[in-house]
Length: 509
Image 1: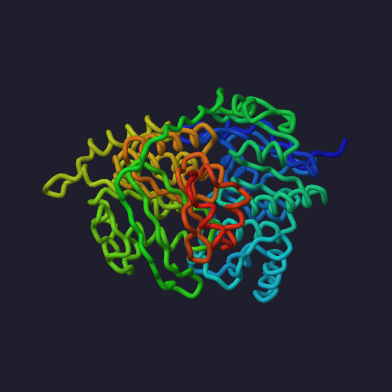
Image 2 (image 1 turned 60 degrees about the vertical axis):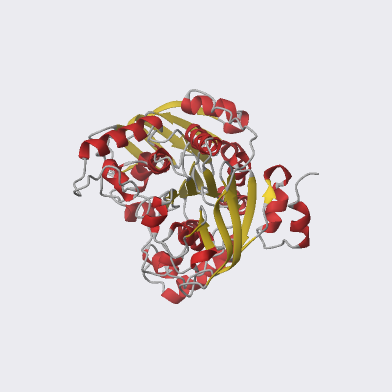
């Protein structure tokens, strides 16, 4: 037998509020694609950070190619041949894509050489990235591509991927899997974290399951079902969503012929966008990241108030020029795609993060009712099963999936009349994803208008009544969910609609 590429022996990592890893052992062979599966807060990301040298274990040892090593920082990890794509991206907003990639590579390379390498890798692997673009102009999906290309350029012997497909389209996922299979065939080992069980079964040939920071099982996922993997991970199968047919009510959100010039050189302008969302329905927007989703969401949330006043109407009120606060007064709540920095202030506790969108805990004289905030935070934590050290836990201390649950829960708990949500289940486990989707359907059934922007077609098909596709700043006509197919939506993602869209969008006679 070959010498294992990586061996972890009895790894333990404690934090003041939680034991993230407890006596974890794991072995990865050369050329093996090894899944690490577990619900949010199970300790997966902490374990990967220990391997990458960004977190030090309290107990246990690491063996690399049969030799004990002490990886003190990511630089030492990269020198060994370990590369990692984080769930929360580690990119500098003010630098370009090429400059960000250059930071992690051999300094003997020139920026021009790195730029050429990025272009070549992007073409080779079908990952559309412009090396000259500043990172702050990228969507989350585009940032994901940058992180993946940066990792691939290091020619890794072990590649760690933490939720790499959470904001990629099905077509992009297929291309990524081709890349990963090629890397594995060349001897590269891959540690793959994902909550998408079908991906793990399709891609991986080994799997370690964590629950509560401990190893609860090791298996070959190719011989398992989604149901059996779910039981190993969360102790049960996720509940089946129940949809109840109901007629839609009045128009809550109406966008009419919205034109917005791009704000920067690398942005996407909106070209005649029109849509309606009615009370008691869920409308979805699909599309490849970077096709105008961010610009549309900014216009709808009030972050971008350049739109003509009458081009966006909420309950008949002209809202195009209103900022976020007046729109919230109309009953609009919003979940952005960026969790840290936009959806939550990293250093603030969860209770105080409620004040980003909730003002009911502020008294008439301007004083904050701290106990009210704490109760609200505890309620959201309990209702959405958020694993956190209490209402005062800093947002950045939560795992990605738990922070997502809290932010979505914060907005749902506010009883919105119109909820606009981007990537609602990004990075959450199957049980939490089912709960969030169920909560969105419960809002719909209670008469709320819901607009969901997501790059997961499965999610959109599961919760939406009607679908649009956005491509190059243009929005397709709506199509009933029952008439939508993956192949059709995939075609529309390239902007290929027209007379065909008119036919497909017609309801059944």
